[in-house]
Length: 337
Image 1: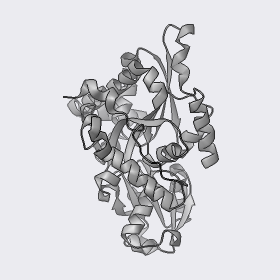
Image 2: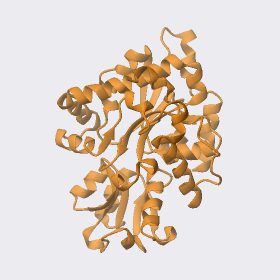
Image 3: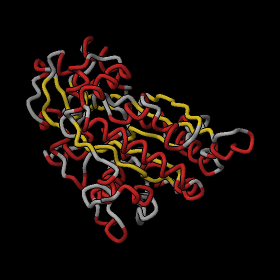
């Protein structure tokens, strides 16, 4: 996976996000936005309502990825301008490789939409019961940080839990066949396993805000500097999707359900598992902060704390000295109240 990330990052450094720079051959810039299926999410409203196309005045293409690590690897052959629905660990891994990757918009904080779910017959009643058990996980994703944090809190050795790396859709099959005792995953699979009789022993709401689980949109920081108007338009489109979700939730949730192929009640339940952030929220301390306050913001602190954990469990070799160039709230400044 590290090798794959290095390749992806090389593509970024070499101009992998420069699709917009082809405007000389076209009337509008081309922008490719990658995303994950994290369940219902306001950015799906932005997609359905063509808000990205409107605010960026661009030809937009969307690419779906099964997980954050998969997206980072695929960046080598898919020149993405932006990637949404990404967890923090894949980003930290890329930053540790020296890549100019930055959070341009923190979409939401997981509260009830992700966590550890176990089979009742497994005999696991709390985190300490995971010792000696098999747990499904997307290795290198946000789940690696979460699992390490939860195990440390319960004083359970990280190496005592057998981790089985698999994509979220595979977890459903492994759950039915009995190949796994537990899973640490996000919606829609987290909710699906609970609906199949699983019991949640931890949710991401149990994590502190400064060491939490977020879905973020990232950008190549160097590319954003030279395409500032596209970056601002991207953020404005996300914010409008959020505003529609707040003002007309029935319409928004119906659009999210169509995008994800689930029922309206399921989409409503998935959305309820997030603390959503607006464009104006981005420059506040609870999200990315502003000016000198960026370094004490919840997002910045989460990058730092995630890096320490990933280093401790061997996912990254060194902890970056700082993340000063990896949190860029300035493109949201026009939306600040």
